[in-house]
Amino acid sequence: MEDIILKKFAESVKKLRTEKGLSQEDLALKANLDRTYIGRIERAERNPSLIVLYKLAIAFDMDLSELLKTIK
Image (tube, rainbow, N blue to C red; front, top):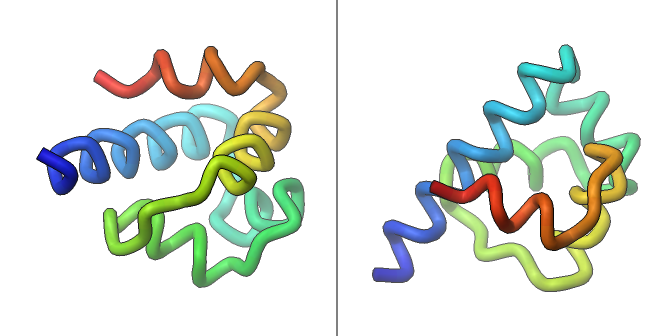
């Protein structure tokens, strides 16, 4: 079950990033995260903490709840 959620979140982050025209490096800079960490999230290799989820939401210019709703 956890793997499925991580994969869905990974797909969601990658989709949002590409829709906004951001590279992994651009997103990392906006979220104050390491570029390699973004790649690991997008490959479902990392289970991001609540703090990281919040940073990603801010970088995508959305509320945390909106970011979580993108997981399908």
